[in-house]
Length: 258
Image 1 (tube, one colour):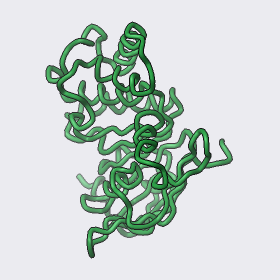
Image 2: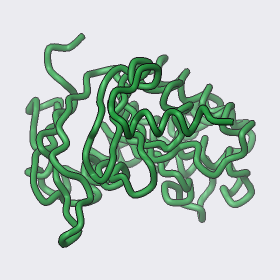
Image 3: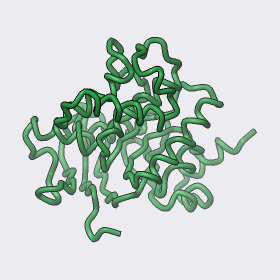
C-alpha cells in the first residue's frame, strides 16, 4: 500500500445558514480503497460528497488530493481550470440520475469519446476504437455506438455514464446512489459490473448510498452519518455485523426486519 493517502479530509464542514450540511468530517482514503457513506435521507452524505468533489465549496476544512505533480494539495487552492482538468482526468463522478452525467443530444460513442478529447486525444479512429472497447466493458453492444442515449434503458444509461467516467482511467471515482431508481434485477447486474471494474482497475471510490447491501458489496470501509456528522466508521463487515452506535444499530435492524 502507498505510504501516502490518495485523499485526506480534515474537519470538513458545510453550513446552510444555521443548518448543518456536514460537520467536522475527517478521514483518509488510500489507493485502491472504496469507502461507503451511508445514512438516512438528510443525514448529510450527499452534501459531503458534493464538498469532496468540489461541486460545493465547504464552509471550512481541507480536502487534500495526491496530485501527480505536486503530491497532496488542497483541491480548493487549485485554480478553476485545474479543478476542471482534475474532474476530466483523474476523477470521475457517477450520478444517481445518469442524465446528469451524460450529454443526451450526442451519440453513446461521442459521450465516451468527448472525455478522451478533453485529455488531448485527436485521432478519430483511435477515439472511436477506445469508445467501442469501453462500451463492451460495460456490457453495451459496440454496435450501438452511434445510437442516441435517449434510446437506452435506465440501466444502460448508467453503464454508459460509467464508461464515460472510466475511459480516462481516473484514480478516484465519486458515486452518488449509483443503483438508485433501478429495478432490482438491473441493480444486481450493475453492482456486479461495478465490483469487477473497481477490482480490475484498482480504483479508489467514495460511494454514497442508503442501501446497506450495496455498501457491503462494494465498500471496504463504511462511514455512518447522522445529522451531518460521522457517528461510526470502520471496516464494512464490522460496522454492519457489530454496530456500536445506537443509530447504526437502528439502521441495520431496520433492514433486517421482515
